[in-house]
Image (cartoon, rainbow, N blue to C red; front, side):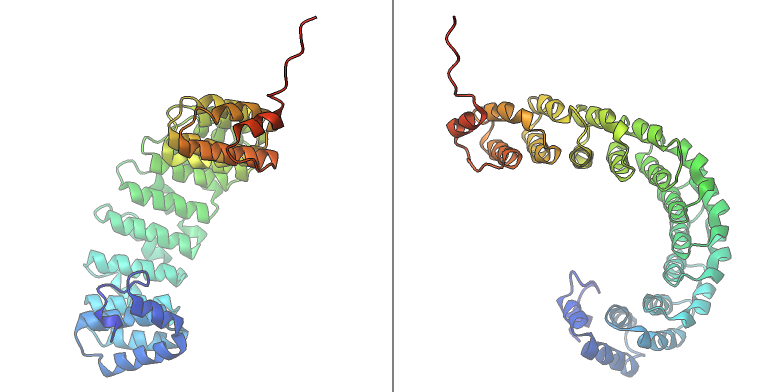
Amino acid sequence: EDILECTTVDRSVCRALESAVQQQETSAPLLATWLRAHQNADAIQVERAGIALSIVGSTKHGPLLVELAKARKADSDLHVQLLAAAARVAENSAVAPLLDVLGTTSARNRIIAVGALGLLREKSAVSKLTAALTDNKQPRLQAAAAHALGMIGDQSAVPSLLNLAGAVSVYVPARVKALQALTVLKSSEAVVTATILIDHPTREIGRAALRLLVEQPAPFLEPVIAFALQTPMLRGEAARAAVTGKFKRLGPALIAAAIDPSLDPSERTWVLEALGSMSPPGSSPALLKRFESAKPAFQIEILKTLPDIGDRTIIPTLIGYLTIAERDVANYVVYALENLSGKRLGNNIDAWRDFAGLNQAEPAPP
């Protein structure tokens, strides 16, 4: 009853549902009993209870959800929601009625059914899902079908997914989902399409194309990543790819990306983490040069990265920053110094200068 009072059946919002998940052995039978006793109750309540059961329950409750779905009109929202709930608990008897939903006129219900068939990894749905990829009047359905085909993993879907990914006047999320599905399918046929799309003006498509290429054992991947490191809003993905592929020769390109003034804050962390992981020669001095003109938030990210690179020769330069950096930044200067040196000298500038030999008197002239 407490679950039904929640405005949405979401564990992060509905405390009663979260509690029910923690007590699955007792709460699942209670939900199933409520559904049997109230199957003709208000549709919203039945839908909430059915979804909750699919989140809380086990596979043994799947037949009940399909039974309740079949008791409702085949074109009703509740019918489809209960079938989708059954799919969440891997109930294969939901397949046939879900396939029937694909022939209805409700776009919303078709999208839900497509997602459910994807969850079930249902190969018999592939032909209908590939047909849905061509429905340009229903772009959200195209996106859902592409995602489902990736989940099902049938190679016969590759040509249709390639067509969708390369289509010019198609809903961008649908093209992205097509590229993601081709990535999951590890389609070598998609390499040419992805190579063309990596420089697409819609960077979401470019990033999806780059992710696809990274999964391919292509000999030209290193120059592709080098190009992406020079391209705004592709740099984060390219940095991760460089680390994954251990492309040591991309060190200079990574450094250039990190110190480029146009580097977007959303990509900065990935690029700096890649530098910390690969530690290319010259990266610490380059970052310190960029540090001087960077805003405090970027300065802090640089200082957090320097210990991962491990270049101790920059310690004297860092000590100099202790006297000029803002307080919050100076704390991270200390963090970098302590992690590079292994010493715990806090913000004691004289102690750091002694450690680095900066307080030694210069020899008298002859």
